[in-house]
Length: 167
Image (cartoon, rainbow, N blue to C red; front, side):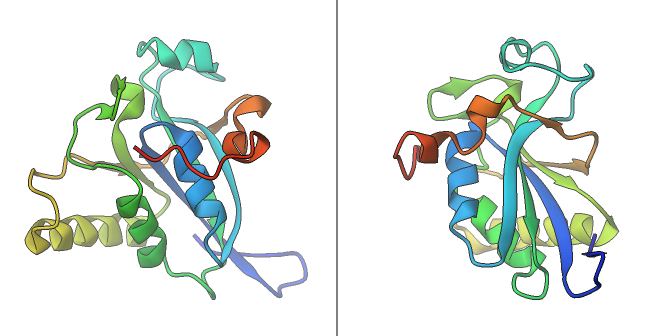
């Protein structure tokens, strides 16, 4: 999903991932050269404009997600996927470390057919590699509406002088 800016000099693409708690994953992406911006929010549920409190109940169907805007001339989607795989456990259903619930599920929300195919290929390659002892349970679904999380969640770790909350 590449987009030209108004002056036509740069293209950008979006990628959206659920990888458990969104704070640490967002911080990881912000360190990657070629990432233009990132935002945390919610995707994949049934309620419009959900709040953090609502999503935490597990009743809205949303996942906590990070939406990454990147420059595809500097960073490929496969490289963006690699950061996703490196920053969470894709073998635990609806759980990351102590965080349990459907909002913490492992998910790749694809913005076009090419991303969907790349995501499927990456799962197959990881399964064949033996990197994970258990099967990968990451869902791959088309992107839906991205609902930005409340301001206090954006760059949460940076605002507190932390670099990671990696599990």
